[in-house]
Length: 554
Image (cartoon, rainbow, N blue to C red):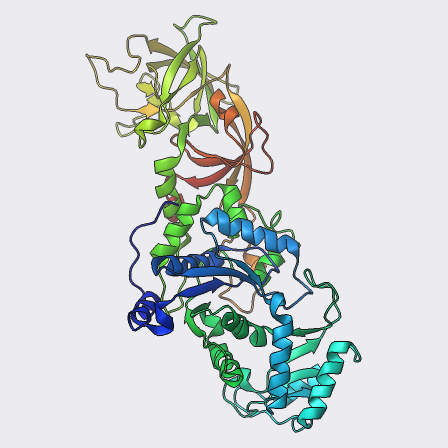
């Protein structure tokens, strides 16, 4: 795996280094990445993945992949497999795969222990009653009438809950902490609820399921995780995380929080991404406009660029929003080094070479990647009729226009210098064809008697591969689509975020494999769509432009 630039020593790395130096846990470092398998990973997860796996690597430790699968309603093997694929694509390999469901028996035993020690009880309040009893941020909660239920009675009821004697929602198991605690998470949180649903791994073996808060810290402890790294939304859950570990007297995993990754002109909330998918605002979870890893992979983003972007954003305690242009810069930086060069015309204007023989075809050489001497060259057919971009021609232009104009000269990339002698127009006066002469003595060399500054790309009209192209703009028209709480964020979906066009490509692009990215010279980086392309019949996604045109446009 190619490494990104040297990373700054953030507060988490400083903490881990200090603990290793002090011999805590015998200098051992164990991390984990713990997604719930109820959706697809997105760019925010990428930051957590990079942090957990790279911390383990840097300190000679291990990182587990653990699926916190305690909510069977939304979880599936499909998401498990997709998450594993995304992490491997991003460039990481786990020490072992774990599932919270593997620990259900141990978690049940620990719950029984907390009941026996007087630290948990079975409650009969309904969901609405519990919410009423819980209080608010400014008012204390009040004790459930079942809070002082004898331990042996609660233990018996809890075992009967497991045996399936009660209806869904009829009873819950709650921790007994403090209903007046200023942290709402400490007000006798639910540990188990009855839910008769088929679990993607254990089937119908259980009809009670532990809550996330009762599962997460104990799973870390079972795996001897030394550093449980979470995003800031779990900061208020840390006292509960520590409370369970202390009461059970088990391995003291330590939770540390960092600011999550947010991007301009997009949303990363799993719930909001689901709204976009289910509301048909996008074509699916792998839509190239989405910040999902599968969407970015389909668009042609290199995994290295995402890792580099996460390193650039860094790890802090302060919430912030990163400019999506920074991500696109990271993509360009990698593709400039690695992507092959090809020529394609998106807005064609015909050129006829008046002094080139009919039927004559010459193969000129194109450099595959000027940044990589080992990338070699390719053959490109050159013939009498060519396509160039309409923007590369003007009938009249000032001295700062270095492309083709009437009476002017320009070099065709990798080929000859041509001169526009005249034009043909349609009935509306629009230029439809350029009649040009070729300086036959200028194949890959400059004339001795004059200087020609402009260089443009082209394709042979006779040999061009005609291919669909999908051009992307920002998914949202507003920089912060979630900022106005009074307006549904979907109101800011950009109706012009996807535009379809046709590209006239040099024939070598027929060999581009689905999923492979190249540079259309002077246009941008394009990827052969992994779902729509077939070998010989590519459909191209625009990965990113050669420069940030969005800022200029706005």
